[in-house]
Amino acid sequence: MAMRSEAVPLPVRPDIVRGLEGFPLVPVLILAGIAFVAIFAEVLAPYDAEVGSLAHRFGTLNLDDLNWHETEYHEWKAYANSKVATLSHALELNRRLREHGCNIIALAAHPGVANTEVYRTREALIRQTAFRKWYVTQMKKIVPSAAMAARSVIHAAVANDARGGEYYGPTGIFELGGAPGTARINPIAKNVELSARLWTASEHLSGVSYLSAHDVGPHTASPVAEVVNGAHRL
Image: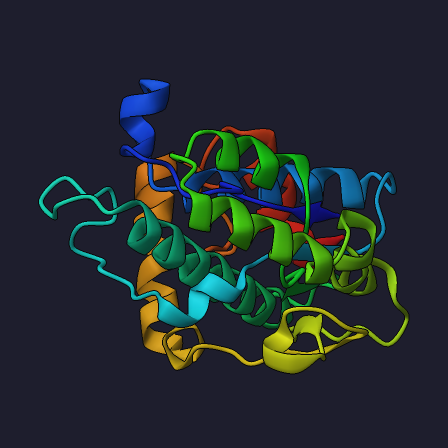
């Protein structure tokens, strides 16, 4: 199963847009749990592939203000931070699955850049100067199609040689496009201590808890927790 959180930078805080409280990673945590239910029901293959972004290289993890309530909101910084968090979650999830003896693997991938409807719709919202129009026209000539960009994500989700804890992406210049291969990871996402703290913070924000270090069985009434916390017994 391939999962993606917010796909484009949002001009205002996500909770303002949706009327909901929550860091962009929270839906990923919940969806991962739901995916495990389907996996154990043999509906899905035992892969959890989370979709990252090149933008994660410029992100950080501010665990004291994940929702940007105290920090001045900046859409691109928030987007980059959310992608660091997504990758951090994927790596931490894979570690916890190994610790619980599960046969599921968690990994991540990014598509590089792609000429998609999302990009075109966003472009329509930007003031179109003469230079901007020229720039967009030139970029269309070199930006991969959605189908080509999807190859790395598909590879992570279904390839026999995909490995848990890995990050895949295009292997061309700057990882913008090209055949799938291993991709560079922001060192922040590889920080085991930060990843564990982020997991705990996400559990608190979402109200969903599973694969926690102290788990000896399900400790919420949700089907997600009941199935995933008991995964090592299935």
